[in-house]
Picture 1: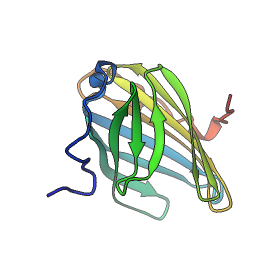
Picture 2 (picture 1 turned 120 degrees about the horizontal axis):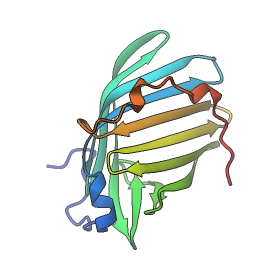
Picture 3 (picture 1 turned 180 degrees about the vertical axis):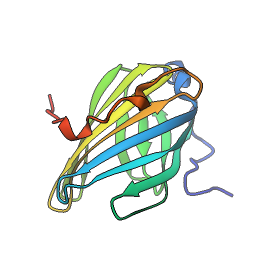
Length: 166
């Protein structure tokens, strides 16, 4: 029986360049909601496998906290990683570059992001989301547990970042 975050058994084996990112990751995310002025955070773990990405942890906002979970299906096409929502629709495509911009249109909301693959032990994703229903920026860091990386001790600069596509 498949869970909502499992890919089909026919998922292809990924390019070896991506295999360094398989495994367990510690995650910290800061979100600045420009509509409300609030700052939210997420702390948890992510699991990256050849056919799926699952993230679980605690989401904290000014009004409370709760357990949060998200997942994506992964598939490999022509040396690129296709990231899809659990129900199947396409979200984004990632290549093997150390830094790369991504874009996703969700109804009338536009997600402009950038991924930074700093090392096999540290990667980050930045999003600026705008539209009639959303206006926020987020910055997440993913660190391999036990790697000695200390970026989590740094103050968040999410509220100071402006994303310029291009």
